[in-house]
Length: 214
Image (tube, rainbow, N blue to C red; front, side):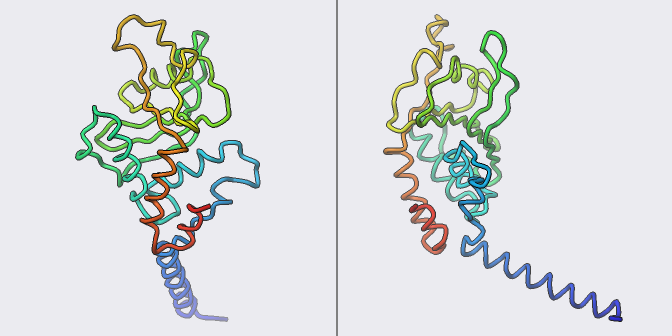
């Protein structure tokens, strides 16, 4: 029977190997597995939201910390003149997919899941409504706005189309301050350009770079 000292030495060696592998995986982006992230085995519907959120997450398996998020928010807040870009803090940000805000109430002023919710320490948060082919929901952007009125409300579509009255309910409010003015971005331009910038950041991470290319 092996002595306790021998077993302890073996466990130490295994721990060292695991640590070295983790360091290597972080350097190469090897942990970034698109199929695991997108939960394809469970036929998850929100594939695009899952991938975007993983790239934006400073704690994501890509190993790039806040590099991708920093590129995203700096680009985003160039469109949002109310934000001081130099004050952005991204390293300790948290990113949630399908953020729960409670059940939708009878007046449809509150509730419903937010596609992507980003919390920036010391700064305003970001709400992303990721709209590809699904139709707008009744009062959807209004409900998200009511959940966090200080957040940057982003309406992401294929071509950057305007948010309609059905989702904003702007006509129900006479005061200009109560009207919703979401930041409009598109996959066609904004996301494509951002991903190109991400690829440059991931030059030394071939697996990650090629996944972004895909």
